Image 1 (cartoon, rainbow, N blue to C red):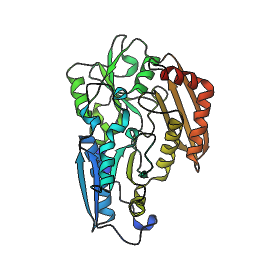
Image 2: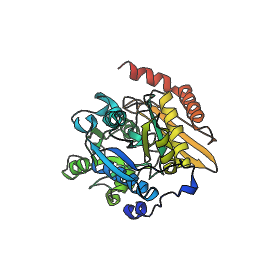
Image 3: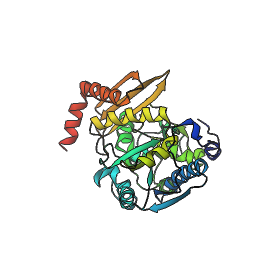
Image 4: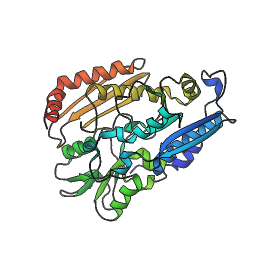
Length: 335
């Protein structure tokens, strides 16, 4: 079992970047409004960014604009069947367009692979644990689950890998915010659930994690564990003010992951994962595409320079296509 330090302490000790570390605009902002979903995890993420901005710009008023998205409201159907991840960002983007907010804070795994041209991801912050977490009140690990055990997940990516590794499991849909999913587990509706380790860690719920699932068994979603900040593409002032919040290594890895997924038509309807790690100045990028039942999986990996992560992502997508991803994608499209 992996043990975690106090996640709140970890993040409270993360220092705000100093102005001298990055190129700064000539004038500091006087007011910034952050659009955020109102789930507990989303608010934690927005408050985390708010705290950094307040330290970075002490004279700036940094406010939160809480919003409920359609993705938060529709909980009785799998996300893939009701519009995908875009349901978590549309209302926040409307607030940016209307001028009600200056920036929006997202979990990068919830950001659609294609943004409308009027929007831009202007910063990607340091990454938390990017892997999936096994959470159960009955079993110590994924390997310990017996055939027939009921496992809850909202992700086709996770489901396909679960079915490939443990075909005897009963995998069922699990929607709702983090607290709702844990309550359903505690009520006995599931033998185990699979969640992003980052969300549990950030909310001080690391003790609920029985094991972190290795990437070899559950390759993460593009951008998992990273926070992204979105703004209008035309707002050069916002981009300059938020530049100190960008973590170059995380951003390069996430850009490679997203480029691969984008080239493969990545969405909630396509079970795929891509995960990049920095190694000695290079990026090690892994990816897969599968059928939902996990009976057909195309896998590939490569390593390359970190200075052009999108090109690396496109290269991996090409490798996956050569290893059978095209046939799998054609099967998914015909459903």
